[in-house]
Length: 288
Image (tube, rainbow, N blue to C red; front, top):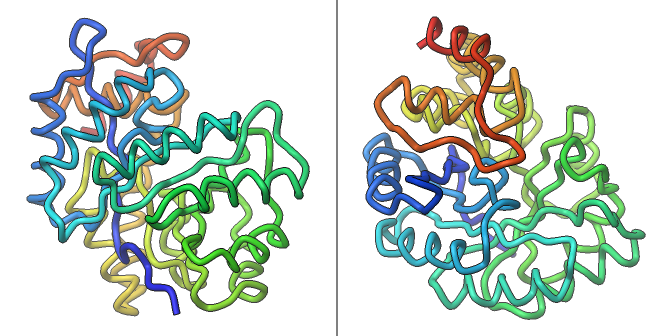
């Protein structure tokens, strides 16, 4: 029986820049803040970490610094996905060498792939490492919604633990739970659906809003996992205006602006995302 790499709240951490280079002191500061808030896991170089705009050398630097800073009792997941299978394999092996506890691997974007091609893509990555792998389905980014039948096949691989499901159809989580074995775990990838997803059996959320509000996010998730859905729903509603504002424009531009407002200047997003608009900044500032 497989065991989940974490249960609870995981922050998909922003990548801080200073003059176009990784701001290592700020990275350590961000990680320590999350640890002090009791966050259960961290994703480094996920979508919110601008993985598509980072070189491999920068990713490895981020992985090394994160491993030095994140204690063993908090899961450290490295984003190593690519639409090039050989590249994803090489980056996943390098992340394992850097000490990552697990990999978060986004589905191939642009070229997409057939179901058989996707299976072989993920199987190649899983076979190349000795640490667990979590699939990452985010159709709004990749143009591909991975089918539940593919999850079922991939669940047979010994180190494929489950999926970060970031589609907008909450019914899919129910289908995954019905079709896949009980040791294929689901983590919600949408802050606005976290509580409903946990009601259907998700083990927590991989979150954007927890960059800004880690304590509230963790409290919401813990309440839901403890079966206190009245409290969890109240906290979800309390966070909802901020969650909405963080997606007024392309993630992670709004969350980086929000971080600046609360005292953590992480720099602008790399192009082609760039800066958030003045209208979005004004709304975020009013909320915060």
